[in-house]
Length: 463
Image 1: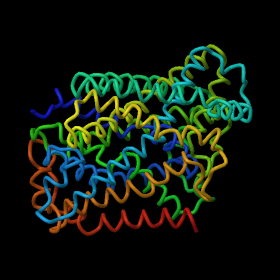
Image 2: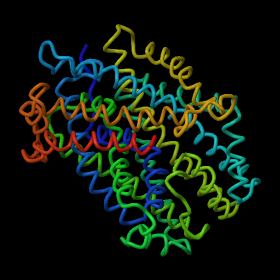
Image 3: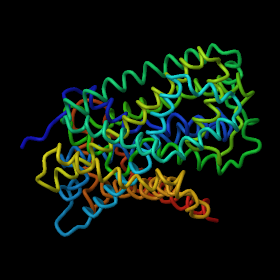
Image 4: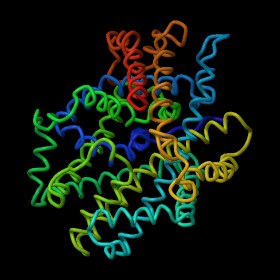
């Protein structure tokens, strides 16, 4: 059967960007920026985005397009006889499932809070952060409620995937991403009119050594490197699958730059919402690295929305969590498509049958994350946390960097696909060409940088 393709380049760009755009852009980027000094951190982050993110994305897209396969068999199609690069499929698909085990649960939280702001119920809690924190704890500790919201998230996203690439994934995600862009621009424009916007934007956009005087420079650099690396969802084949659905009409460096630029725009724009709001309603950004987790959305930001009053706050809060649903669901749909493609290549089952099987499978696998805030709350690993934190740590600190290093080595090593084949594939078509010096950098420098990031993150976590 002929492999389905995207109907337009716009669909490919928006869906690939949708895979990268998610919770890391909207809550983690602005808050970690606040924790590590503001504008100077942003500059360092953008530098590492160019040094790390784009080259790894180029590698993934090239493997996907050259093989015309998902991670299930892409390495097998390109490797030389007797090589073992195809074992990467197990790390990749494992990473996809592990990511969805925690991501669908958090996406379900977004759905619940969208309902709270739409109905106005959240305003009865008030504006006190501790009260909102207790309310959030009670919400995520409601096992039946979280079971329902997680199941609804999985079912809805798999339903979209079951319709096929063009009729489901491309059509729905394209409109979702356009709506996401409209929402974030509108919310950013509104927040820039708040009374504290000037101070917030100064902190965010004007580099100052003052913002970093109490922060270790090495820690800031590592944090910026990690954020740049992890924000694009590279390393587990989630980007490569969309490379397998496109033609050779355009070179891949230009596509990778466009996707990265869109992903970065969402991250930067989220700062135009959060920093003006924080400086208006809470007097600044009172966070550190240890507080950068999803709960920030439901406590500090909820306090900000509630401060705006039951009319303005209800509108802004509802739109914000609708935006968060679009951001989270675009990633879920993209990763689900990679999982479904894996099954389609490994079995003779239909797309709809695969979706039904994975509806039950992913829901069951998500139970530890769901229970981690309720009946299994006491089960924790020291220095990591509960099941939700464990799953996030394994994906972010192990699978993504290891997978990215494998993609880079496969594309540049003579013991893998090789630089010549990689450059031929990435430069096929119109658009930006991949310079030879960048290929040399990917061969001899980038693997060392990724390995160093991996080791530093583990050492920093446990020592």
